[in-house]
Length: 287
Image (spheres, one colour):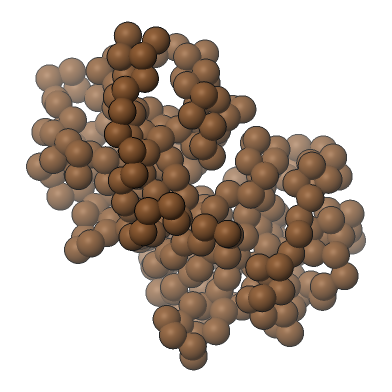
């Protein structure tokens, strides 16, 4: 069996920046076991598998597809960068003729629309609820040490815990944090948390005017630090929109690779997440 595979870096216009995802367009569904083995072999934060919903469609003509995401250790319910990369693969490599493609996923229908040099994703919004920092004292200590914390929130839908650093902490504090992913995982075993967001207020007066910064850690899903995380911004977008009184925001994820996301919180309870993607590899998996 030969399976085409494309690796694209999402949320960037430069190779080797942003977040890489492997995308496999499949003529037929494979077993879950095989999906997981391929994702483990690719060893990227996500490998995505696209199949047609209508057998008479091709990847060039179809407007609806099924999409599933696997980390090296398990399947996940929502992934932003691999959805962006999947849309980019269809538009750039399959020359899809539609202005928008829709993916049927574990998080419902997710649309990707080509716009200018990039893509706009229609995603669910996942507002986090305020939490008592004492309830997460140990994980906060592992994550940010003695740095002051302003807010602790939890998104129960995505199981993402968000720690906001105090505004006295600038981008350099967030970037310089040395987070022990194994310690995070051993500290939090309740099942309530499957991902950790650390965020700080941005510097909108300095070009290009980022409204907020973040980093994201998910050792519970086999990812020590994720370079750029669309799904985390379904939580961050909701939080910062309320705090800043803004619907449109520009965000930067401060991993070593780094990535930029444009966000627009909509009145219908969803969020547009926009970014670019660049192809870095095309090949064939032979089994």
